[in-house]
Image (cartoon, rainbow over all chains, first blue to last red):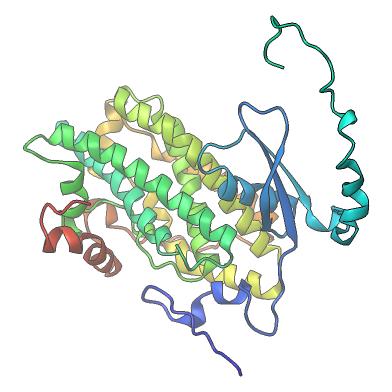
Length: 122
Length: 250
């Protein structure tokens, strides 16, 4: 079953004049911009943290988009972007083999030391 | 003198409010989510600038004038925005080109206004300049991308240049209140801005591989309240609530 969505535009100009329809995600010439992952360093933080992803035509546009999408509420002072295709991820199917073996190895945590009472914040 | 200062401040406020309103029409209709947010951010920047100027104008006017009464209870002929701000958005090329032409103007305008002997205007200018610097960067990027992009994007940009160019001359033709404030070192010298503007537009157009049009006819009137038919529709939408339900609040 086909569904047609007719987008309504505001204003006193026709749809034919509206460029938005063409760069958008409809029609036969549909061409998505590549996906980028965004990392933001906050004022307090030392590290860039992953905050999400977005679409952009190139790195410069990705940084500008990230500024608009992810730092609107004063979240950051530095932005990194990397095209998502360059990120290599571990395979979720191998999770058992990769992570379960660490489950019962409590001795790998430094919890067996007697600490003097005066020592705090540990 | 005081009336000139009020008019000057209202002119700046109206510019910001009307182009802000036009940009806000893209909210929910942007070509992609990221640009939808970008242009909505810019719209909000403008509403913020407009508020600062309206607040100042209302203090200068007295008589229970408020920022809201200035924005919502004046009619077309009292608005002093330049015509280019009230033109319909057209397509993305026309919207981003208008933003570029206007932001270039605002960028040099606020740079000068920072040195105004009127400390309030100078302070608003300094605060707004940071926002405008970003608007200029964002809109230049789009002009270059579209001009130096595909055949269609270039054609759309050229059509936009054709639509908008006649409305750029007005930016540099001083109204009476602008001449008056310049003499008091409170306002800016538009002839200097015109040179800076020409140079910047030339640079970006060159990068976008398009030409500056030859035509030099300047459609004017906005600064003194003579507007295109479009402003009435904007005000009808923007002012409806306050007109129908006076004093309504959130």
